Image 1 (cartoon, rainbow, N blue to C red):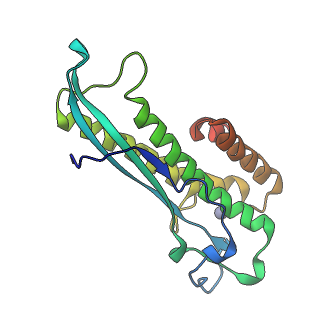
Image 2 (tube, rainbow, N blue to C red):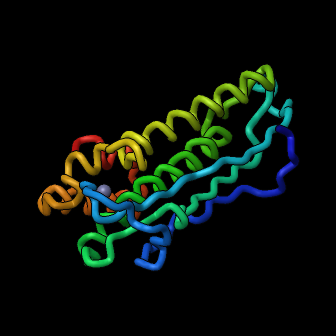
Image 3 (tube, rainbow, N blue to C red):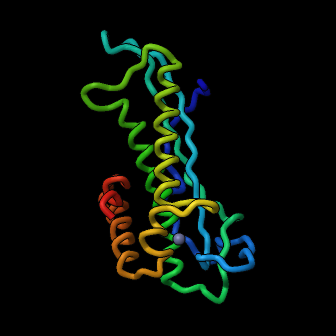
Length: 191
Ligand SMILES: [Zn+2]
């Protein structure tokens, strides 16, 4: 990689969805959801050789950049079914992905802090571990929030938001994860 990035940042993780974000045409026929929201996060980083720590020298992740994106062009809603409750349910799909993006950012940024910062002997070791970490977060996003072709735990447990009691629990957990900085796996793990 070695793109010589100049800064670290996390962005796009604090959006509030509105119906105008749902730009695609709703699919015809019967579907179990009245709307579909989608988001993704992408990662950039670079690294450098660090020999300042004596025996702990090695390659270190330098700048971490995580961008969360609302995928408006593939999002759709059935106009007659639009309600505040449905929008809140859809917001949850976004929040899961956005907060996992935040957690990914925090985890990778954290590699360089603490008493024993992560160092790698080889560039390939560093790249492999970053890739594994990114894959783990992508899988969590899929498992929790689902996709256009896979139903995630969020929809299974809340019955696509129709189970008001379960929806309340998930909404509260996501608000807590956002407000307190609780990691998504911890906030949603028991639901
Ligand atoms: Zn849903």
